[in-house]
Length: 249
Ligand code: ADP
Ligand code: MG
Image (cartoon, rainbow, N blue to C red; front, side, top):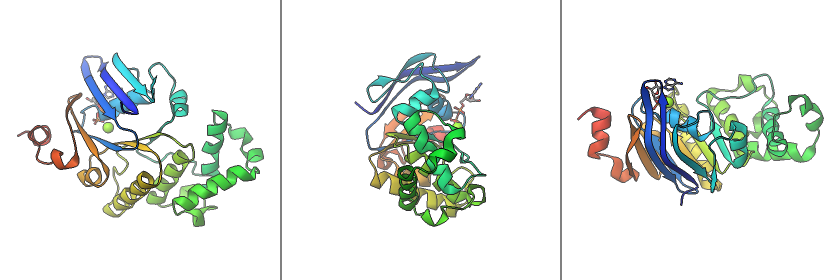
């Protein structure tokens, strides 16, 4: 049994069957990549895991519990965190304030913006945020406005904001999309660091094969809404079905 078990998931948008009979099992503490051509249904699948979309059929079990019918924030509290394509940070707040907010969310179950100021005096929470920044090598940027960080550091900050919530499963939808090679490589290093240091499972949707092969232990290839192959990286290269899906051979 994986920490995430998807069985028979289907999702239709009007006349378009975006997902059909998707089965996916993600082993605890592994990095599992989902790849596939544009429009394959990768983001739709991810949206079904986080409560943004309700599948028409099938089941999604996380850590032994069904996520279906739960609201996104409830699923987040179960231990699933999602990293967005564009980092979702509070540009007008400092780096440490950004990290402290999700610490409260973890404790209170909701973002309580109005209460930040009073809470910000709570030493323990600030220290928790500082430890996370230190862990990710950005403690020196503690008091900088988040909006003025480089793109790579924004991504790093967003990861810090996710990780302080101590998720069991981190979902990443094309975390390096639109990045230059240098930032992509930094992101790979960051994700390796997270993978190696923490008890965390990662499910990563990615276009860039260099990223996939640098990180993933298992790869699921999705094409036209259905998983074609699930394999190790060694076995996926040159797999006839993968070549067919990508190259039309
Ligand atoms: P991927 O992430 O693999 O590129 P998506 O999951 O975004 O693919 O999309 C799969 C298919 O579903 C595409 O044909 C897309 O146009 C369609 N689709 C995605 N979201 C919606 C939506 N909210 N309404 C209608 N069609 C959608
Ligand atoms: Mg997508």
